[in-house]
Image 1 (tube, rainbow, N blue to C red):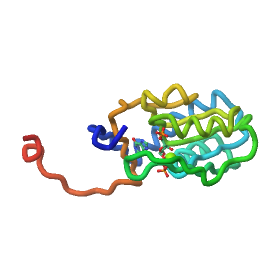
Image 2: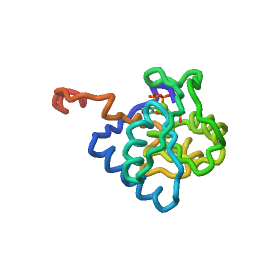
Image 3: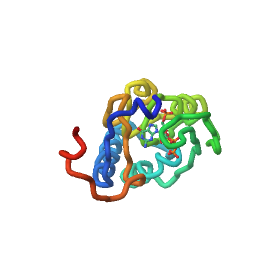
Length: 159
Ligand SMILES: O=P(O)(O)OC[C@H]1O[C@H](OP(=O)(O)OP(=O)(O)O)[C@H](O)[C@@H]1O
Ligand SMILES: Nc1nc2[nH]cnc2c(=O)[nH]1
Ligand SMILES: [Mg+2]
């Protein structure tokens, strides 16, 4: 979805992200045991750290993939992958949107369990576990992309 079609935003605080990543860990503990985690950089790094702590996993690798420049998706760049077919492994990312990243990752690690904290409808069929769904026209704002600042009163922005 192009940036001008992204009307709504869904800001997520550090506390909310921690809570949601722990909820994901509760779901995943029931499906284990797991050999290790492949975190999809960069967005999957923080949720992967929370899940690794809760599941007491110490073997953590990275799948380095980038496709968005600001809010527009371009060509997918696979910078680093993980050896093996993913058997017994968890793959963790922050979200699925179009599902293109998830599709590429599934081809690389077909036996892994793919888990995200958030999911949009187009990507949802490609994840095995997720916690919260948001609509396709919503842009999720993560705490590492935000800072506190003042905003004008609603009355000045609603007309
Ligand atoms: O389902 P898709 O439409 O493929 O989008 C989802 C991917 O997009 C974002 O990563 P991005 O490529 O922006 O890199 P980043 O994690 O380094 O921010 C997000 O972290 C997911 O990995
Ligand atoms: N931060 C952020 N990155 C994305 N990459 C693809 N979709 C999204 C989104 O909704 N929010
Ligand atoms: Mg990412």
